[in-house]
Picture 1 (cartoon, rainbow, N blue to C red):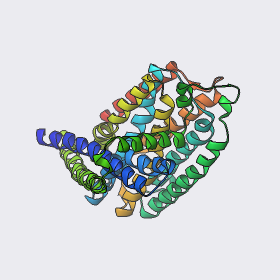
Picture 2: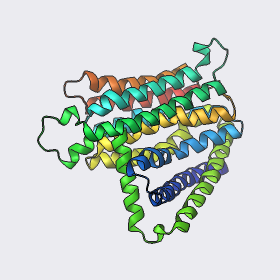
Picture 3: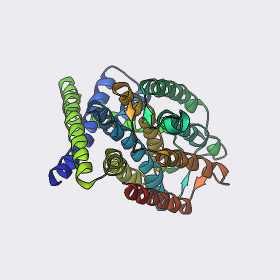
Length: 355
């Protein structure tokens, strides 16, 4: 068991470092080809933040462990939406922008429902087991393509139309701007920060070094993904849990822990809007692209992933949209943050008991 845990932890570390190297190298290359910060944020940075989850999903599919693929996505998204956002709100109540409330959160709910419809074939197709087949995978990828297209179009509107929540204020502080970010602005800001980081280092301006970072990052992702899948599979056999359950808990939490640290840090610094935009965008990409690509490799049969797992994810997405929507000041308070955190603890207890 010790070797399985060691492989799992080492693999998670490699995934984080590999994703960072690939993202940094790709940002440098994209900047050299005069790609705008907006497109870098919506593509390179947005995809780079979900690379660990995506690699584990696809690697699980290649190794014929489909339950681990879909379990990792559901577990990681549930961790982000319930625990990470819950703790963020406990640290500092969060005002939700008009863009986030009327565009981004509904998109995330649609993505979660699409994953539920694609995966819960027992409920929707009357089958005796849950499976995401290739046609459902293609459907998820098509929805993802439309999502990226819509984000690029909406980014142009964000530049010309003021946020309705800010229209009455003559001036807006940096903190307020951060708190009114959406998916587009969040990824754009992260793209600009990545570009700035590239420009600070003289060495990273060298084209050969950028490509070296991409290659080294990809190698780390491949090896790390392999180790995570092998370690998690071995651990599942040792403790008597299914691969899907290990993916929902150990693997998903391990991959999402960096989100918890960076999001809470951003919240403490008054940039909760950027953190929320990043989480929502990552959850959308995970649900659509990670599962879609994995299903193209092999149909994702997931007997250990059931109705409770899907409805928890969809319910979390719906709550995060409806609560600020019906509140007077369009915000998420500490009380709701406590509720989200308790919901995640309850879900984890149920998952462990279920085995």
